[in-house]
Image 1 (cartoon, rainbow, N blue to C red):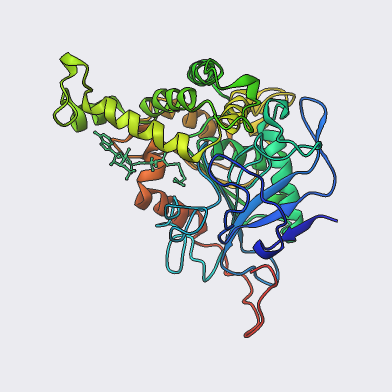
Image 2: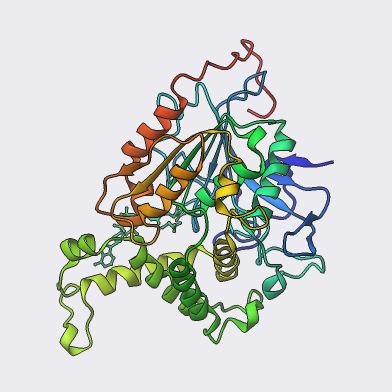
Amino acid sequence: MNTVLTPSQVPLPPASGAWQEGDPPGRRRWYEREKPLALEAGGELPGVRLAFETWGRLAPDRSNAVLVLHALTGDSHVAGPAEPGHPTPGWWDGIIGPGRALDTDRWFVVAPNVLGGCQGSTGPSSPGPSGRRWGGDFPFLTQRDQVAAEAGLADALGIDRWALVVGGSMGGMRALEWAVSHPERTDALLLLATTAAASAEQIAWAGIQLRAIRSDPHWHGGHYHDTGRGPHAGLGLARRIAHVTYRSEPELQVRFGRSPQGTEDPHNGGRYQVESYLDHHAAKLAGRFDAGSYVTLCEAMNSHDIGRGRGGVRAALRRVTARTLVAGVGSDRLYPPSQQAELAAGIPTADHLRLIESPYGHDGFLIEVEQVAALVGELVRGVPPPSAPEPGRHHPLS
Ligand SMILES: CC(=O)SCCNC(=O)CCNC(=O)[C@H](O)C(C)(C)COP(=O)(O)OP(=O)(O)OC[C@H]1O[C@@H](n2cnc3c(N)ncnc32)[C@H](O)[C@@H]1OP(=O)(O)O
Ligand SMILES: N[C@@H](CCO)C(=O)O
């Protein structure tokens, strides 16, 4: 039987870049899959566990469930204050909560940490079948495998269909996969700054980052978790490269220009401000994220092609029946709005393409909370209220 565990029932949290054995689990709970997960590329993954968080209460008719799917280095902590295991407030805190766009007096919001990740879900830093960490033996995953694991979580929660599935960037890939592989379980869909298939340039940027990590002498083919050292330099380099692609050229120019960092002299071994900024983001990620997970997730993103084995992208998009909004960020150079235009044109139930106005580039979908909240509001407006929970009785999952 698939099980859902509360923090006090969790026997051994998997170690990871951010969260080590013995760390307090915060408000996370865990779904444990009974059977191994059959993987798209062949083989299977045993011992699948997904960390997830929920907000609000599931209605008795289970009609008010919303699935929120995070991007590459995000996690299940979408809303709420900093807490044990999550040193920062939720990454979309302004969108989820009482009176907010996803009003938790009305909606039951579920956010899992992705399969292959390092914030409580099974990934390369988790113990494998031998009891040792998977490391470099962790299997290759696709977005479809990740969604298959999430479908198991939905089953365990008793959620037959999502009133809304929301995701940006990598989360948008999984949201789209939900709507294509489970149209009968996806009533509405919000796709932000994402694509139907990873493009050559996206694969190229991720490929360079993978090279950086694998070139680190502490990578050891992915088997570094018990060496006491990790490929932090490689991961930091990968984050620097990625972060430039996440922001826009005008933003970097206006914000940093040619300024030196403090009293440092770039003509004499010192750094420019923008270099210091990237150093900061590199160190921050290396301190909170597992390099093996980064590799697994980047490879899964590179594999993303919604049309694979489905007669191509156009045929796959025609399977979507959810009421859909697609939005891009005007200044996004990594996931350019032309990719979202393809989605909006190809999904029969999609409204016209929306553009988030932002100088921040791809990260605009994380930063422009008010505009994202307006899009969520547009999708959920008009949905009849779910049946109210009986006074004094809480659903066991809420
Ligand atoms: C720790 C966690 O659990 S994070 C939560 C999960 N993570 C995610 O969801 C990933 C998604 N999030 C992100 O990618 C990012 O955090 C974003 C997009 C939300 C950040 O966007 P912004 O708010 O615009 O941050 P910005 O790019 O301006 O960076 C600010 C940081 O740069 C630092 N900084 C700014 N200029 C400089 C400089 N010249 N030198 C060094 N550091 C600098 C700031 O001090 C600040 O540091 P802090 O974040 O440690 O407080
Ligand atoms: N900066 C974000 C967006 C990636 O698409 C992240 O690190 O998850």
